[in-house]
Amino acid sequence: MPQQLQLKRKSGTRKANDRAVRSVCRECTVGCGLIAYIQDHIIVDVMGDEEHPVSRGRVCAKGTDFVRGIRSPERIMFPGARNRPSGPFAAMENIEKAMDGLADALKRVRDRSGPGALAVGCDPEAGLDFYLGARRFARLWETPHVYHPLDNPIDNPFGHPANDPGNKPLYQEGTSALTAPTAPCTEWEESGSLFLVEADPAATHPVAFGKVLQAKARGAKIIAADVCFTATLSKADLPLLIPPGSGNLLGMVLLKGLMELDGLDNEAAAAGLDDPEGWRATFENFSLADGAKALGLTPEAAVGICRMLVQHAPVTAITGKRLAYQPDAGVWQTLAAAAGWTSRVGGGWYPLEAGRPRLAAAGDIENPRPGGREIGFPYQGGSGADAPQGIKAVIASGNCFNDFFLPFKVSTREMDLIVHFGAFANLTRDLAHMILPSALWPERNGLCFSNDRGIQFGPRLVSPQDACQTGLGFWMRLADRFGWGDHFPWRTETGRADPLRFYDWVLARNPDTAGLTVEALKASAPEPIFWPLDRGRGVKRTSPPFPTDSGKIPPAPAPEKISLPDGGTAQTQDMG
Image (cartoon, rainbow, N blue to C red; front, side, top):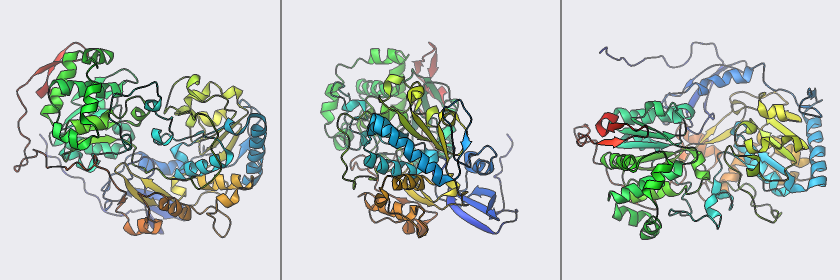
């Protein structure tokens, strides 16, 4: 076998530049460090920051290809409007005239249909400040319909199906059940096995997935379950295809299977759960056979997977964001605590994209929210019946209509106003009556909340064109036209939005981040600052039984065959 040599490179760049800027990539929630080299206000080279503790110089294709987007001839650079989605856009005189036109159109919708007829979709492309600004504006406007794909479903009291009185959950849920990771990705290398459910970090979080591969190289077993074959499944020792919407059911089947194998840790469950006996009672009538059948598994295969998890503990369960919006999402925290995974380094539960605290952006505004039940919006997919009814105006950033705003698509012809705040032509732009250009993340200052509850500040790399607004600037300009400028007091001397003052204000309002400032984040760079991490309600973590002092993984137990979904069999030792 040929010897593998580590790649070597010289630090810095060979391209002519007049300055280098250290920042943080905001393409996803990993938060990799970047160094951009700039010549005459143009980015000429980008490389990973080798001193950054999260990425150690690694960077994925998304983290370097953003430069093409900034210079793209396809980029939206000027505001435009049209009477119908099938017609051509007419360029508007300037951004101020465009905001005047938007305000007039919104007033007409409110006069005809009321304030609740407005919905706002906040694609991450527009930045955290767009979402937080939207929540402030929506409180003043008196509409509850503000949605973000990385939002916590329990932020809205009706946002999670378990809060429906007619839906009795089968799991133990505390106040942090959907949002508290108990297995930081920095500890994945210490896991005996990694169990990924409806999560595809190989495609969406490549640097984080590198830690999965490092764990595998050290002997961890990789089990991955998803509704289709993904890049992550291609690297799994045991790939499982499950029906859509059944990820949380898989967690319940595993919990039931571990109960039957006597593979739970009573002491850890008692320490990690409020009512360790109560949740057991809820599973007495849960049928392992029926649950396994709904997943396309035999009961023997389900128990075989459970046995594999017992043999290769501690286990880290990595779940995708969509599972948090489905019934019984809290089963993962319950499973991790009851099985004793949470009490050991290298074990627990890790929900992807759950590393942001609940930032109170509008609680200081006294305007009451509209009466009646607020409708929790699904993360993605569904029919038009899933969407709130009576929506006549939508402000959508990025490409919302191609993702979590899909349920709205069937009713767009009935809408009076669709506004696209974005940088590129896409489906959302094709449906819009108005387009307003947005600044991209390299063109704005911003906070990055990483999966491990780390907070970093990412300074902008280059300045945007005059018509390209930041998210906070968009809402500030719009609020001015309704006489609400005093509710957006974060301005520079020139009247533009000051995101640094805004972020300081938002961080100060949350008890988990109070005392943290942008200046403190700048001073700590490239080290992130971590906001409080709840590791399973105070469960004491102990050292794992492996690696041993010799650095070798203990031999696996004798091979055992389990039934697979396709009707075949496999040996547990053959899965690694």
